[in-house]
Structures are given as C-alpha cells and as structure tokens.
Image (cartoon, rainbow, N blue to C red; front, side):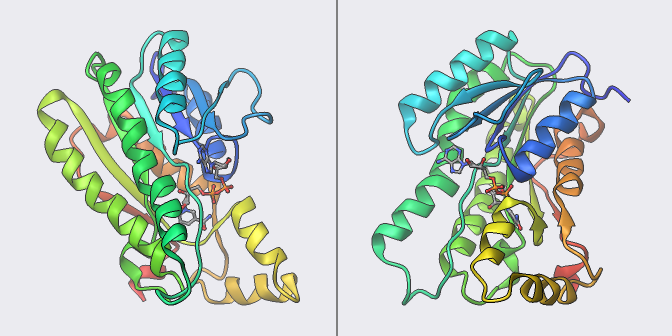
Length: 244
Ligand code: NAD
C-alpha cells in the first residue's frame, strides 16, 4: 500500500520506540519522513534526522524549518516526544512538574506552532499527538504523567476545533503499556526484571504488552487520508486495558 505517497511527515521522539516504529511505517507506506529527537544519532537513511529539544523553542523552530525545507513541505506532524514520571502529588517537586509538563505538553505546542504555517499549505494536513491510557484511566503513582497526558488529550480537542476550517486534522492516540526502550528502562530498575515483566504482561487483558508497531499503525491511520473525516478523536491502543 502507498497511503502516504508524496506526503511529507515529521515525527518527534522518532529515534526510539513508538516514534521510530511510526517513522519506519510511514516510510514503508510511501512518505518522506524527518525525525526530530534529542539524540537522533541512531536514525539512518531514508529517514532525515534533526537534533532538537522540544523544551527549547529556538531549536524546535530551527529543526522544523530545516525539515520542511529539506522535505519540500509538511503534511503530517506526529507529536510524540515524551518522558515519564512516577509518584503521587506528594512525591514530585514543582521543578519536576514544570520539567515534565514542559516536555510532554508545551513541547507539543512548540512543535505545532512551528509546523502550522507549513501544514496550511498541505492538501492532507494532519497532526497526531501521542497521549496515553494514563490520560483517562486514573492510574496509581502517575499523577504528574497522567496530568500531562490528559492535557495532551484536551489540547488535541481544542486544536481540532481551531484548525478544522483550515483543513488541518488533529487527533491523538492513547497507548497502553507499549513494549519500547522506555518500558525496558523501567523494568531494568526492578529487583527481578523478568518477573516484573511477567507481572506486567499478566495484568494485560491480552496477556502481552502492546507493540510499538501496533501504536504506529494507529498513528499512521490517523495521519493518513484514510481518516480524512476524522478530527478531535482519541484512539485507544491498549489491548483492551481501558475496557476493564
Ligand atoms: P522512548 O523513550 O522509547 O522514546 C522517546 C523518544 O523521545 C526518545 O527518542 C527521546 O530521545 C525523545 N525525547 C525525549 N525527550 C525529548 C525532548 N525534550 N526533545 C526531543 N526528543 C525527546 O519512549 P516511547 O515508549 O516510544 O514513548 C513515546 C511516546 O509514547 C511518549 O510521549 C510516551 O509518553 C508515550 N506513551 C508511551 C507508552 C509506553 O508504554 N511506552 C504508553 C503510553 C504513551
């Protein structure tokens, strides 16, 4: 299939996990893809790589401008860069709140702001934000992270309303526990990582974690002209977790 033939996409956090799987899938479906990441050293052709920190407005503006110039425009933005945080409201400091909100929420705003002038020139403009099951599931020990992802969901609805008449669609995906380097890092801190992984898998209705490719598939659908009448939605990719 070539749903993305002729389309140009930017994927933030595209050097790893869900972002990398998305960048690879969009390329396989015919897109030209630029990756924006803190550390794009692992990103290889045909992907284009741009080093930027989504908390630094100047670096975001420069990277988005360079990507749009090199690609010859932008049709799709996958706003995916994000970091985790654990704890209750008593555990995280103000600095931690500001830091994680800055990456997970304001980072997406900065990327969208820099990309919107380019998206207005596209006949198939779409933004897909990576939210999380944490936005709506009420997970324990995830107060800060959940608040950032709930805000991403609300941002998605508001942006969809603001830009629908300009022909720009805005949707989000809500992954459950996805098997990415992020989860690998979390598990490696456990006393018995293999037992912890088995327990995590046992908590999933499917008995396994969601794969990065499965999240990428949902993002690709929302980014593609196949979902041309869909805006302001969230698509759960959680193996049925939220239905419990
Ligand atoms: P990951 O750690 O494998 O990849 C995240 C990427 O984002 C990395 O390449 C990292 O360098 C980049 N990044 C981090 N901070 C950045 C910054 N300030 N500027 C630019 N790039 C930055 O993680 P992942 O699991 O693939 O997560 C991707 C997204 O999916 C995140 O937004 C995360 O919140 C969300 N998510 C993940 C899961 C999961 O279980 N893995 C579940 C729900 C939502």
